[in-house]
Amino acid sequence: MHFVVCLKQVPDTSEVRIDPNTNTLMREGVPSIINPYDAHALEEAIRLKEKVGGKVTIISMGPPQAKEALKKAMSFGADRAILLSDRAFAGSDSLATAYILTVAIQKVHESEPIDIVFTGKEAIDGDTAQTGPGIAQRLGFPQLTYAIKIRNIDDVSVTVERKTEGGREVAKAQLPALITVEKELNELRYATLPNMMKAAAYEPEVWQAKSLPYDSSHMGLKGSPTSVSRIFPPPGRTGGEQLDATNDPKGAVANLVEKLFQQNIIMQHPLAKGGEA
Image (cartoon, rainbow, N blue to C red; front, side, top):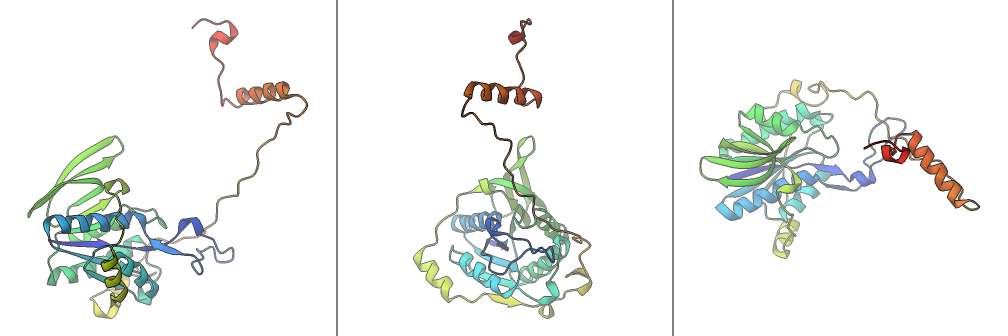
């Protein structure tokens, strides 16, 4: 079977900073990581390859430095990595990104038919959860979203357990299909030494816009109906009111309790006032 994983390199959110002049993310000097949800998508694809046989292809869109994320992904046991890198892709929102990834997936599918496309639930730098479903829509694949368990897979279908707001749901789709995954789906493995050595020598394929039948009106800023008017960090946390209990601890506690009552943070039980239960 052939599994394709869409993977994104994202800035480590613990190190994100905002440029106060341009209101954009400052990426220079900020460490990048594999999007955590995509890492679990890759892990599941590799597990299925080990279980039923086949091949895992990784596709990513990003700047040239995204090669490092692909090389790391290869160290976990993938077979092929493709980087979509072109200045024409810059500024793409989730709609345009889904279009670019779809065209690349279609090219792969023509030479090596795909059974399942895996994506993470969302990217931690955007949190839209739209790219995976957008790819499925363009490919015409059934989509199984928020997967937390692959229950069964055979030559014609896949059955997953997916997370819903009200609990859990079991869904089945015909292949080929697209699956977006949650972190609960699996536990990530450590790369083996042989795979790390193989990945260190591996050079991901780089596809530019001119090598694929892209329509420029559907990608980059031109093909992105979403615009960001302003980006700003949340206000820094400030210390709350302080009560001095040095000289009168009991009085300070009583004062604190009274303030909690006033703000309805705690409620007084009816029996405390002599009421009836």
